Image (cartoon, rainbow, N blue to C red; front, side, top):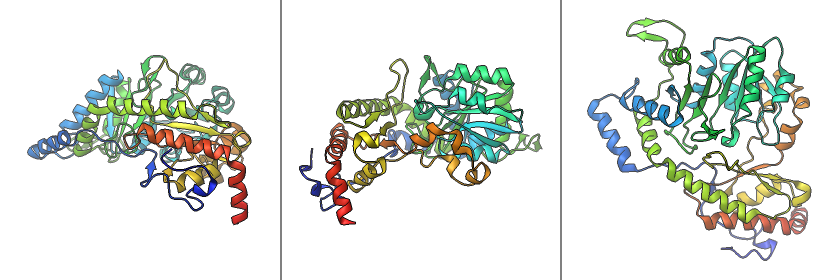
Length: 402
């Protein structure tokens, strides 16, 4: 390691200097060729077309349709608006079954669309459990909203069977999953619609933005109306809508990043392998691995920390890492059903979610992306191994200092 770790005193949470002089974070933005980006901005200014479905938004949508093999890609100003309008475009009322183990925007979008979230448990792969979904279906259920967590495809066939059996809409939050596949097909073309985030923290971003993809012509038409206040032409409004448009500068960023996406993913893939190799054999540390048969963007390096095997809790390890300027994250903590307003709307939800509740105490996501060199990933993994070996001494020192 680049830092002497022969004693607990060398840890930054005690008397040592941080392992890294600058913070390493999860989801630090990666951007493509800035010269290409500024060339696009100059083109934009020469046209004086800055927003309102300009040429670069149109180019972006067409490029995504080809890359994800979908009939329609509709760009939005952000991923949350994309989710909300995707739900509103279904023209449904009632309940939407959704995991609690997701970013809060997933559930906020359901409420913003005038629908009621019903939380369902997940399985060992952190994805919505179809058996739990089946138990959650009631006469008020209108839709299932699966989440492709960490870029892994949900159990789509089983969820589609349940949706067909009960006459439900099947939708997906694919915020993590751009350029990932399921059974060899790109995610984006399943269910009625799928929504992607193009936020700056994602492997493919437009500063701030979102996409909805669909194979359904009517749904695509409705979404294009809705994102522009419901206007069908210059003076005619034909449906309720809002301002969901993606701007031209944001589309310029997305197009530039699309040109570099393969290199971003290559970096992530290499780092994931370094972490996998370096963490192997550390008691109490489980690394979520990806299906080698599928294409993955490898943005997330996801650990599960078993307190009994590791010798300290996930949160204790996080305290050590953060002091070393390793800004790991405990996604998705504490899970949506324990946040307001959902904690008040469904106070008994936790009883239905044993896997979610347990997982939220164990998950730790490590830094990736262009800011991290392979040697940095090795050092982070070696630090985690040191913490496991010295867990007893570290806990004793904390108790003494307290």
